Length: 227
Figure 1 (tube, rainbow, N blue to C red):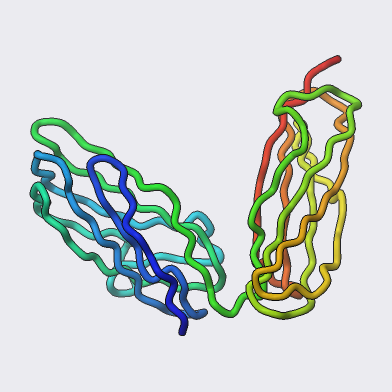
Figure 2 (figure 1 turned 90 degrees about the vertical axis):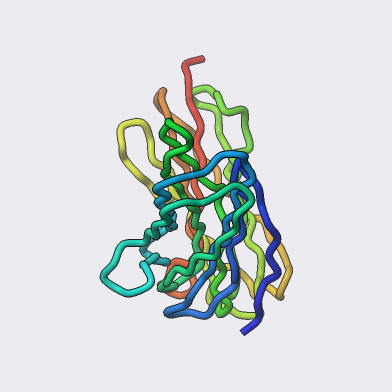
């Protein structure tokens, strides 16, 4: 299995690193390194690892049946720990860590940024979804949504769908695109257009499929106002 290089990231007062960030499909172990860079002790430290897409990637404790958290009695200034979590990866997903503790006499809450865990067998990833307009637009003005797909390895059978949910809660498919074969590292952009007919918040979804299996999902938003 190819391992992706990782670098430490920082959000006060924690320096952290999650590895590996590329795994095979199935059960895997990931290590979360934490370092307290502050001058204060953190006590009663509850560390959790969360998946943003639990359908594709689930986080467990060290053993199945336990929650996705670990507990430290104390994390001292400049102390570094390595915590192991068990994951079940059906597909790639973003994860993030949270810490709940006591700092001096105050409650302490900390949340990391997102880290992508890739499943090495996947052919492609949905990198981004953009709405090509100002965040506030007008009724009757046609909008374009653009999705960028990046090939991870050669393969066929990919499909991209665009859906739009209007302010009343109704979702409609706007476009389906059969994607040509992408080579590793190649990027391709695809667009779909829609015309809003009512005011309010619209949610735009892009789904990337390999056959029937969803391997990518992005969401964006736009607010529609009267002319």
